[in-house]
Length: 627
Image (cartoon, rainbow, N blue to C red):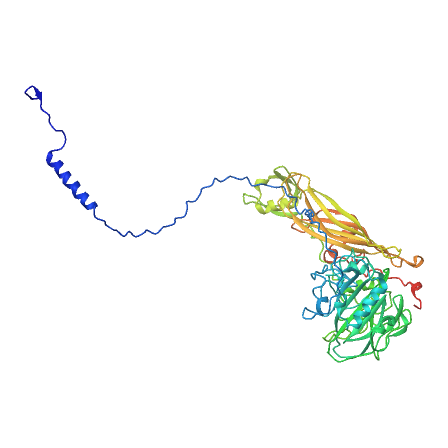
C-alpha cells in the first residue's frame, strides 16, 4: 500500500461514482412519480367452487354369517308389543241416515272395517268366502258389542234386540239402523238358506268370529230373485228364533208373524207340516216375470242361544210334489244356483233324511238351467273318477350297464358296498365292478336304487278351544284344534343328491258314523342333508274337530256328533315315484293313497276309497210341538 507523508491514503470501496450518481437520479424520478395519483380498475375474479376431495374411509372385511336353518320349519309367532291406551269413555251416539257413502249410508261399507273373508275353500251351511256371482251375500251383526267390537255397557237383550229389528223393518230395511252394533268384517256367500236345526255356536264360527258368544246376533242376506221362465211361487220357512223375507221392497214371509205389526200385507200362514223342529209357515204368492230380477233380503238370528235354524224352501203353483217321511210335500230348497257336492254335504249333515229335496226343483238365476228328471235324494252326486295309476312297478331286474371302456353288460344289481358294485349276469355269475367304471347314467341309477335310510317322526300339536258361555246353562260344543306335521332325518353319512317328495295326510273318523274325513293334506320336497343334526320338517294347516250333543236340552233324545282324530299317513317318494319310506297308522290308508291325493280336504270317504255323505241328522220328535 502506498504511503504519502507517512499516512495511509483512504480509497472508497463499492461502486464507481457514476453508478451512484445514476441511482440517485432514478430515485429522484421515482419519488416524483409517486407524487402522482394513478387509478387502476381491476376486474374481480369470480369465485369458483370446487367439490371437496372424496374422503377415503377404511373398509372392514366382514365375514358373512352362515346361520343354520332348519328346512321348512315353521316360523315362530311374532310377539307384538301393544301400547297401553286409556280410551276416553264416549256416550253411544245414534247416527242419522246418511247418503252418498256407498249402499245405504254409514251402515254399509264403512261400519265393520275391512271386508276380509274367511278361508275361500271352507264351505259351511252359512256359505263360503267365495262368490259365484249369483248368490246371497251374508253379514253377521252382534248386538252385544258396539261398532268397534267392545262390549256394550248395557246390551239390548232379547226385548231390546226385537225392538231394533222392528226399527229396521219400519225403516225400509236400512242397515244404518244397526250402525251402533258390531258388524263382522267377514262376509259369506251362499246360493241357498238351509240352516237346519243345529247349535247357535256354528254361525259365529262360520264367520271367523269364534270368540263371539253365540247369542243375540242377527244375519242379513241380500241378493236377487229371478227366474228365466217366470211363474207363480211362494216360500215356506222356519226360523228359530225369527226369520223374515222381503222381495221387491215388500215382506212376503214372516215366521210365526213375529213382526207382522211392522209391515203391511197378509200374514204368513201356518202349515200342518214341519221344517226342522218347528211348524213351517207359508208366505204370499209371488208372480215372477221371465228374466226380471227382484231384490231379495232375508234376516234371521238368535236371541238366547242354543238351538237355531233358518230353513227356506220354495213351492211352485200347480206342481205336484212327492211326500216326505211326515206325509207333507217334499218341497225343494230355495237356491240361486246348482249346488256343489261340498254344499250338499254341508246341508245333509243337519237336514233330516227324506225331509225336503236338496237337489231337485227350480233354480232362481238369470240363465236357463236344463231341466232334468227328478232324482232320488243322495243319488245325485257326481261319480268320483277312477284313482290314478298306482305306484310304478319296478322295472325288470336286468338292465344294460355301460362301462367306461365302452363295453355294455346286461346284468342285475345285487348290492353296492364301498367303492364297488356287485352285478349278477343272466347265467348267475357275480362280478365286482368299481364305481369309477360306470357311466353317469348308471351312477344315477345306482343312487336311486340305494335310497338313504330315513327316520320318520309324526308330529301333532293339539289344543282345546272353549266357546263363550250362554246366558243359561247348557252344554256347548267342544272343539279341538289339531296341527299335524312330520320330521324326517337321514340316519347315515352316505351322500344322496336326489330330491325326495314328502306327502302328509291326517285323517279323522266320524263320531256318529263309520266313515272318515280327510282333515289335511300337505306335500313338500327336500334333499337329505349329510349333517346328522339337520332335519326336514313339514307342517300342515290347523284343523278343527267338533264334539257336541245335537240336542243338549233333551238329553234322553240327544245324539253325540262330530269328529275325532283317527291317524296319519306319511310317504316319501323318489324321482321315479317309488315309495322309499313311510309311516302309516293304518295299513288300509296306503291302499287308497291315489284316491286321497285328489280328494277334497274336509270331506267324508269310506275305507274303500269312495266319497260318501256325512252322517245324517236323526229326527228328534220330542221337539215337535205346537209352539
